[in-house]
Amino acid sequence: IGKYQSAFVIPDSVVDVGFRAFSDATYLEELDCGQVMSFPEKCMYYCESLKKITYRKGAVFGDKALDHTSPDLEKVVIG
Image (tube, rainbow, N blue to C red; front, side):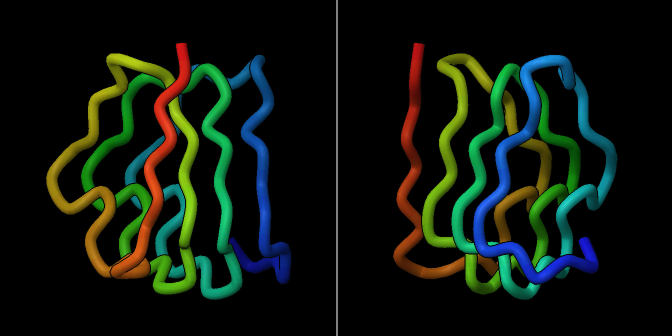
C-alpha cells in the first residue's frame, strides 16, 4: 500500500484479500477488515506500525499474516 493513510476500512463489498495485500504498509496503524473472513499468508506482513485490527468472529489468518506488526497489536473481534 503506497499511501500515507494511518487508518483504512475495507469496504463491506470486499470479501476477499490477496497474498501480501497490506504488506509493508509503513504508515498503517488501524485496519477495519469489514466483511473479509480469510487473510492469506503474509497479508499484513511488516506492517510495523499496525496497532489495531478489527475483524469478524471466525476469521482465519494464514501463516505469518500478522508477523512483524506492532508488539502491542490490539485485536478487536466483532460479530
